[in-house]
Length: 325
Image (tube, rainbow, N blue to C red; front, side, top):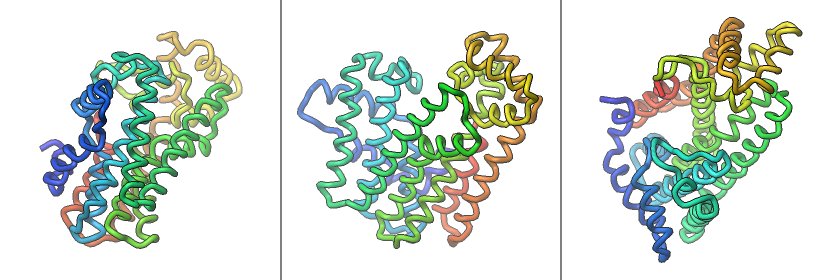
């Protein structure tokens, strides 16, 4: 059994019901919008975020589950989907999970409006049910995501990202939404503030480890059998590169920055940068940091009694750093 299927086992019924509830949450009277939202639902990914919501909710409450938990998962998935639609416009990307992106099929103007629609549906789903606590969690997450993207854009222009800034960017861009999933999971079943924050921290730690793993893919052998170097081409300063810069001589540092600034589209130069990062120990250092965050997440999980939900979350934490894609 694949790890994702294994993780899903204790919440299979809930996930099936969630799919129909999520589809209903996007219904509208505009035929064009319905065509687009149906297309979005058909090309769904692994749905890791609702899985986090459901597993955390069940773990902290000994299997308890409420309608609010479904709403919490839908709120998160609407925000996540809207942000992906907007990301594809910002990045001028034509593909998403092997399918054409919304902007590729319906152009940028419609894609931006669809993203706005999904955000507004998320807010209304909260407000119509007086889920103000869930709304606060997800609104903070959306604020963080926007700030993280803008911080990365600002720093990419100067290539002056420190390790501290790197972690702040990935905390805001990626980890904040997984943190919100876990916080909402706990909040949806009536947990106390301390426990909600504990689960939010758990999600943040996993989210950071997840993004570090993503950044490592740029320096390891991809399915095509060679390093991709996509982050270097896009002038993204990730942890392996930051570590190599911090441990380079003045001459090497100048060459490295010049390579990323001016020769980032040159395949030969990109390969040389990847080789330099590996030589300086950037991969080993980054891997150790990823495992550090994984370890902290496991420490939090181990404060809970054994259950099938805890087991699934343990598998999830390990899957995050062991996945091949």
